[in-house]
Image (cartoon, rainbow, N blue to C red):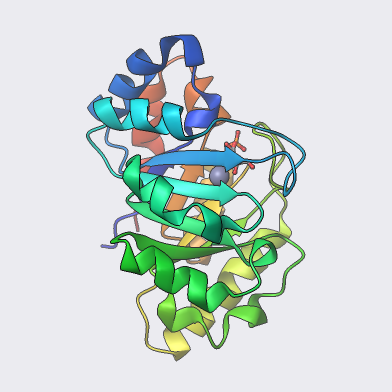
Length: 219
Ligand code: DX5
Ligand code: ZN
């Protein structure tokens, strides 16, 4: 059986009760914390930055999966490592020298991944896939939580799965945006490995059970 990894997105947590929400995730069978960093340029929203990540790291007992929605992320790789990132993903659309940026992430000791917006073809990954620990496919337009899942993502997951298998790699496929039990099931069937879920988890009456439900999608 292949295990599906669950990464609750802290963007949907209660920031006035952040330690409580982090401990909830620690106590659940989630695998990672998904940390969304937005700069107000690459995406039309600003989320949180280094001091908050550093504070999360103090309490988190699971790896931090840091999703950088910022222009020229290469400027801040060392800093994100220093505040506690374990995995760093950067948008294909946000950095010109993507190959160099991935190497930079690995050189500081983090796992490296590429994120694709919905409109960016899967084929751009062909010559760089072997450098990636993970590829994150956006299933919404990045910038905000609580949006509706875009169904085109299912075909995109299948295409990427095929490319990974053809190249004989074990790159993880992560999906971000509008994930719930129903879309999660479709994604896992299509070949996804990691599910990010923000509002579905944190707005639930019982977040720990909601996480367990997603985890049970393991195939
Ligand atoms: C949005 C972020 C997501 C967001 C997902 O740009 O990348 O991680 O938190 O939120 P939900 O799961 O509510 O769609
Ligand atoms: Zn994200």
